[in-house]
Length: 327
Image 1 (cartoon, rainbow, N blue to C red):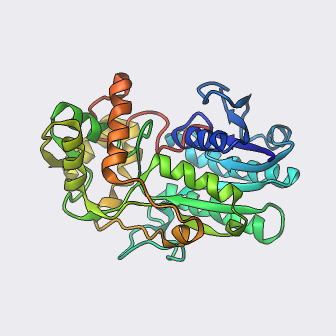
Image 2: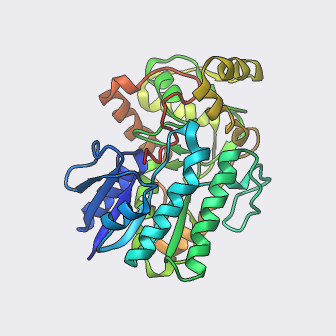
């Protein structure tokens, strides 16, 4: 069945990919900078993922390499392209498929549902870097260097995820405090449960029809931000009030917490309906998304078991962010 190499294996997405691959009976090699924090049952390798020679050594014998790696949020610009280039080279050198864990930032501000062929119009530099990385990967596929496929998630939520739908909202739900929504709470939105992202990436690594294509991974039917918060409260047994991050409060957060400045750049996603079309992936795999209630219940269970992560904050505040994990 070959070896499956997961880069960024100690992050939220990478760890789920590892578990899905293990459950399917694959041999999994988990790569992170530290070589720690990976799921049980994997072969562990510590490496700087920007080192193409080292990554080629680690990927020897692999049939698939999963790019779930992210540098710290405040150092994307100097490292992300090098990281992606390294994994393209390594996967190509060993003849493995490269699966890229992507998001929707490259689309920018979109009217209507985002589809895989939506125009690429990023409005923040992280979106531009995501667009560049995707182009590098698809170009490598087109020229025959590395067989590749891309799975794109909407805004993530779930266990271990640091996102705009993360600790602040779930901690408010657990405690009954006011939940501050990052935009208009009455606009419809879709989101990706972290477990669905991991399962979809595992599928893309093994499905023969996925090569050379981009897929939006499963999302549950659209709800409003207010309904999302109310569902958290219903599952938690509380009644959190719904607030809204105002422009003035956001400016203050950006001044007082540099990492919050990085998260604040992404708030544009919730200034209009945030809708992602996942029909292409559904047709490929037949999978459907985890229900909101089920995903929220799993997330609350995780926060209860990890109270040190259940900290009330208004914007993502950990040094490594967005759910795809560190490199």
